[in-house]
Image 1 (cartoon, rainbow, N blue to C red):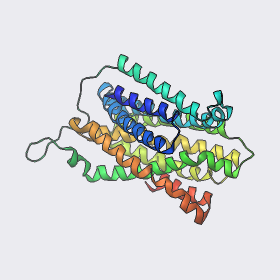
Image 2: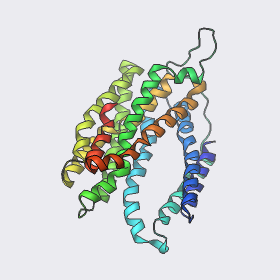
Image 3: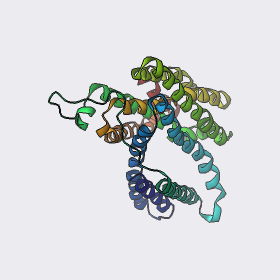
Image 4: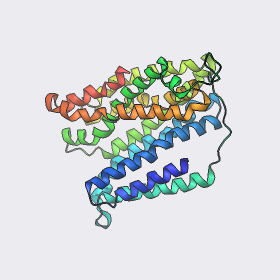
Length: 316
């Protein structure tokens, strides 16, 4: 199933580099999303079955390293590969190259990855009062899960606001400064280190204080990241990159930890389904709220609008 989802995802990307009409691009973007939507829940379920509790947050963090690698690579690729205009294809080369890589990864997944034995995790062997297994709906309507989804959605909004607007923002306010490689270095280098450090610290604390202590690491890391995040859109380029790096180090600890929490508090039989619903809510709320940046910018200015939506780092 994971292989099939990755193939769909990759082929849709390749076709996006070929199409001629806008409606075709929109349709393929939906197909790509359909393939992508299955990857994280399936992969997270597989990893939680393979690795022990004391390594779980670190494993989730390393897995989600790919997100920051993708963001980071997108800055120089989008700027410089498009500008190079290889074979007179312009931006299409970016899509064609990424799609081919996705298909290669799908082939490797299908030929090398084996389905592990399913196993229960943490506080998951629960039943209803009647003795029946807990259903997906009962898990989703749990107040703790609802609050976790809301918090993740707000945090995701802050992250997506920066991801969607970083290149345009710095080009708008600092048109004479090329920050493409700086953004690449900060997102891939510092962001990735923060993801892994968050996983390691979380696992160490859990080993001493139990599963529930992951939330403490999550809250503290995001609180520390808040002020530097504002600095990244307030200062001139040098200090903007310095504060962005500091913010990224702590802010990006959240992803691995939050999914480690989710897999540890839900029953085995609905684990992948729960992660799918969690991602659906997080991506549809947090991923779509940044479209409001433009109308707010018309009232408060671009910088003011970005600052408001970056507060997702604090609100959650």
